[in-house]
Length: 261
Image (cartoon, rainbow, N blue to C red; front, side):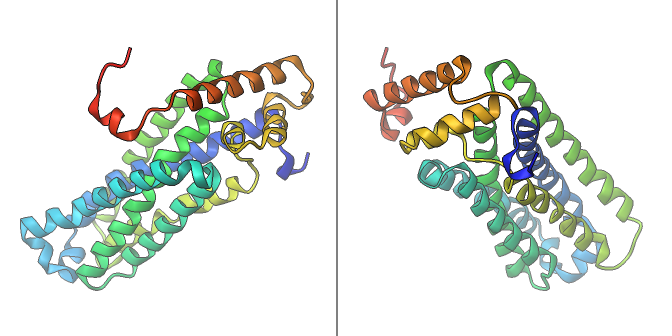
């Protein structure tokens, strides 16, 4: 079986890999910087962080970038598609991570963390949606547990790595933990080469023939576009999308939290 034409379980595993590694990356970034910020060599290169308010700004600017990244995913996710949106997030993450690794001045570190956070906001918002749109309801809950487990495991990995490097001296004490995160986008980028766009997004764009083929690929190695289960799922997604189009709710209405029932 060609990797570019995965079907059934291998395809679902590849989709799950995209989401699991993305959430691992998120967990790693959540845990890595707290110890980096207090390392001796980091304080040497960035003495400004000895001031509590500056230290707080450097730490929290990642969350600021993630906030705007999540907004970007909300606004542009349906326009670009799940895969392209994830690619944008990966590119932003890579740029931000590299800026942090090679930083010699505090403004560069802050800019790197904001850009990195922006990308993380995109990927952490989009990958779970992509996973849900490519998974059957009977396994969706299990896959949510997988992503939570990966997030927690990577958070622990970041802290143990910082603990191990705490006895070392020099830039490796903090540059290596920041550089290690480049492993995650490489894995995600590789997996993205072998997965299709989600059938729901394809149907949102009225690309019904492509959506039907993707549903058949996800259904199993022997499934065809004429199988009853494939056609039933296709029509179910189609009905839900039509219902959403007939009864749209504006962003302002959602924020008002009025009971519309």
